[in-house]
Amino acid sequence: QKEVEQDPGPLSVPEGAIVSLNCTYSNSAFQYFMWYRQYSRKGPELLMYTYSSGNKEDGRFTAQVDKSSKYISLFIRDSQPSDSATYLCAIQGAQKLVFGQGTRLTINP
Amino acid sequence: DSGVTQTPKHLITATGQRVTLRCSPRSGDLSVYWYQQSLDQGLQFLIQYYNGEERAKGNILERFSAQQFPDLHSELNLSSLELGDSALYFCASSVTTGFSEAFFGQGTRLTVV
Image 1 (tube, rainbow over the protein chains, first blue to last red):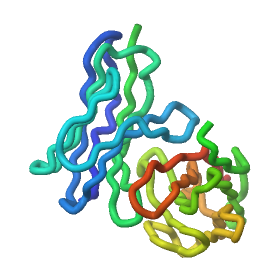
Image 2 (image 1 turned 90 degrees about the horizontal axis):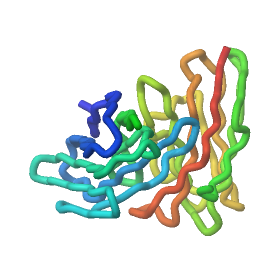
Image 3 (image 1 turned 60 degrees about the horizontal axis):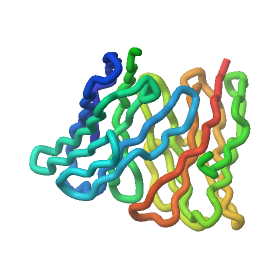
């Protein structure tokens, strides 16, 4: 079983839609949860991180962690074509970040 | 620009050969991480160094090795290359070994022919 599972998509939605991206993880000891965005031919860049359970909001982005079900989510409101990218969840384990497979998202104008 | 520099950007080499990928971390960052990204496996953690010492090892093959030098730059050596080693190799750096924002370089695209 992979430590982090993420639906690779692809996911295609119209501009302005609300996007929901999700990951599940297996190790209950994980405490830091991140979302990275990766544009084509670029390195991943950190979008948001949360510690333990709860929500965190940053503009149009909301990250949510439910430790009881080992489930993390990223919501994008009022999605824009510039949000088209691959989104990777990542979880801080011992001395390393464990990444999900990444979900390729396309926002259609 | 993340501040992490990786060279070269692209590398094409033949099977059986050896290559060296280089990473310069952001100024002040002591940790360097190496990741391999392929289409079917996603981002796989290879190895981490902190201030010159190996701190954690992931799914790194025995044909691969890395080191971090006193000036904190790091090199990833890949030998006896196989077609399946073709991938994007990313270096990331962070201030500490614990939780902190990891900044990724632009990657080195390795193609083995």
